[in-house]
Image 1: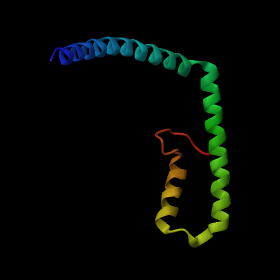
Image 2: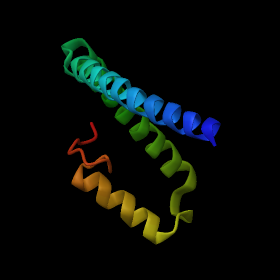
Image 3: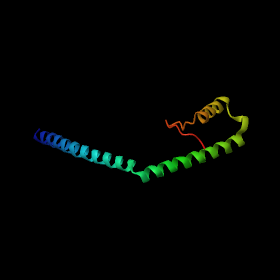
Image 4: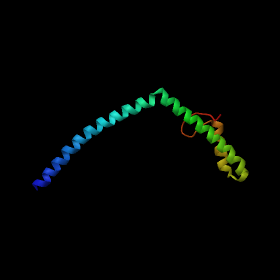
Length: 98
């Protein structure tokens, strides 16, 4: 019984100390991530990558459209058409294709 009590007390102390240090580390990581995300170089690179991705997706769309033609189901065709007209990237952004 004494060993169980010692084990439970040790477990409780370890948990409390771990959660305190874990929370501090979490806050530190969160702060660093926020700083990185707000860095102009990172933002420019992310926007450049997103723009390049949209260009590649647009090129792929045209290539697939040319090869597949009328063999696509009407529901898929209408969904793609509505997304392109709306200018949405389907991730919540309001970007338009070039």
